[in-house]
Amino acid sequence: MDCIKVSSESLKEKGIAGVIDCRANKTINIPGISGINAIVREASSIIGLKNRIVFMDNEPIGGDYIVYRYRSYYKGDSYISIRVVRRENRVFRLLFVVPVKLRRLLDDFEAGRSIRDLNIGVKRNMYNGAPGQKYIPDFIIYRILGQPVVDLSNYRLRVDGLVEKVLEYGINDLYRLPMKNIRRDFHCVTGWSIRGVEWKGIPLEFFYREARVSGRAKWVYFTGLDGYTSIVPLEDYLAEEGILALFMNREKISPDHGFPARIVIPHLYGWKGVKWVHRITFIEEYRDGYWEALGYHPRGNVWLEERFKTG
Image: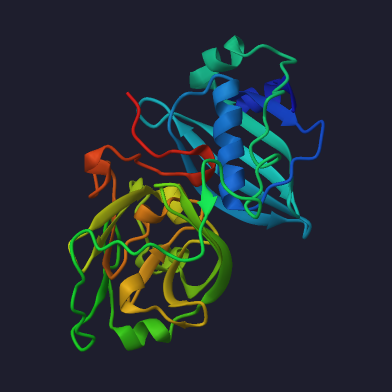
């Protein structure tokens, strides 16, 4: 991608110092939202943006295009807006909108700079195997805190935290909610993968909308009936293939795999997908889940090999 700086008086009148406009000089094939997230993070790092990046929303433009919006936050309420333009499975443009109060970041950027090593999503394809993984025939089952006994008559999924509306669903309520099907490889952080697992469940974004989550929320904390916990960034929670899975390979999820419901976010390692989940909590400040407290990565992106914390 080749990047240029664009500035004008009309932009300044809107409080915008300028825009860093990056356009693809070759096809960038993206397998899904995880690939777009990775593109945004890598491009941001290359042009010098080091702050935390948060996915905001996406929307269709003109029928053929989708615009994905992100923010790179700085001190206080200052942020740079990042927009990604995608058509079908191709990303061909990124725009970094710099406000006047952060003009120094625009001034420091070298005009005409080319992002030549922007290759996440180009060489790595979700169907060709994740880096550092090996396919095996069947799942290895983990019950770190034991196998919980599930009483369906008392089971409730609770959605709470930084929400306007606390949600609570019994098992029959969940089966009546809108569902989607996905087929994706499953990746364990220990290095094994399973090809083409079929999942069916409720898009996680559904609970986000129904609960009317506060803009202060930055993380999502999951709790299972066994007491196991994990945490993911809100932007990963909102990935288009993230679901509360109720079915696996066309059957109800078995007790070993997390009946009655488990979290599935295919671009994250399996430890993030809490089995026997009964609580989804939106929070502002990061806190460790079970494995994160033992040194595992806060996010756990498979394609970036985020297995352990650094520093």
